[in-house]
Structures are given as C-alpha cells and as structure tokens.
Amino acid sequence: MNTKSVAELLEISTSTVLRWVKQLNIEMERNEHGHFIFSEEKINILKDVKQQLQNGIPIQDISIDKTKRTGVAKTVSPESNMSQLEEKVIQMETSLNQKADSVVSYQLLQHRREIDDLQKQVSFLVNRLAEIEEVLIKQKEVAATAEEQMIPRKKKNFFKAIFGL
Image 1 (cartoon, rainbow, N blue to C red):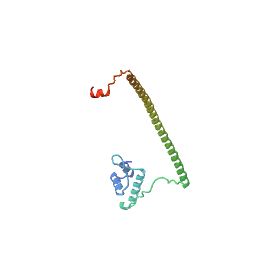
Image 2: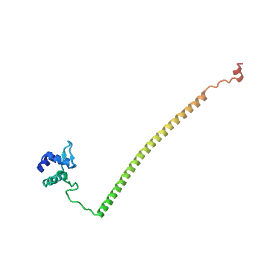
Image 3: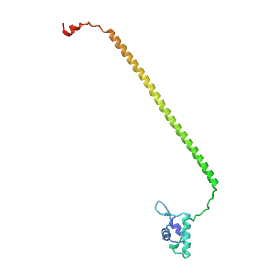
C-alpha cells in the first residue's frame, strides 16, 4: 500500500503518516521511486500508534513492539527437525555423488578423445616414416646403380700426379 492509501485508511494526513514513520524510526521498504511501501504489519503498527496517541500518550513515549507479528508460531519437535536434517544430508550426499559421477564420466570421455587423437597422430607418423624409408631406399638404389655405371678412370701414378712427371 502507498502512503496516501494508508493515510485514508487511518483517517489522518499523509504528512502525519510520514512524520510517524520518521519519528518512530519504523523500518520501511521503498519502491523504485523511493516511496514507502506499507505492509500489513506496518499498517498495524501505525494503527497501534494512533490508538496510543488517542489514549493521551505523547509521541516520544510511544513504544512500538517490533517483535509483534501477525500469524501463529509453528512449533516443531526436535525429533522431526533431526529427521528432516538427516533427510536433507542424505539428499545432499546423493546429489554430490551424482555430480561427482557425472564429472568423472565427462573427464573419462575427454581423455578417451585425447587418446583417439594421439592414436591418429601416431598412425599418421608411422605411415609418413614408412614413406620416407621407401624414398631413402630408392635413393640408395639409384646411388648404387649410378656408382656401378660410372666409367672407371685410369689411375695415375701417385708420384706423377704430385710431381707432374
């Protein structure tokens, strides 16, 4: 509810509502424009303030029971709290185990992909090495046949070559 609606409900002016909120330090929520938003609880507090003022209590002596709340307190036995807590822990453990399993599965799949990639690279390198060996064998064969086909030169006498005789 906005300030004007609360003022109409309490049959007071909007400035009175704003003054009570400020003087009594009532914690208020605000909207995006900075205007107060009054909850049912805050309206009940202001109704109580109005009643105390009508009874002749000065505003500086008015007490606000901030712990006063509407609704019924729910009582829960300690046993049910403990069983709920145990159930929650079991759920969290199960969830954690499932998450760990999914992480491990993902990691295994990643490692498997890496291993497959490495195997492809090794196969490529083995094939490439075989091709290079074939080329080297062919080059050795060509060199050997070329050496065999060379015309033998006449051997000069060692001393004739050196001294020119």
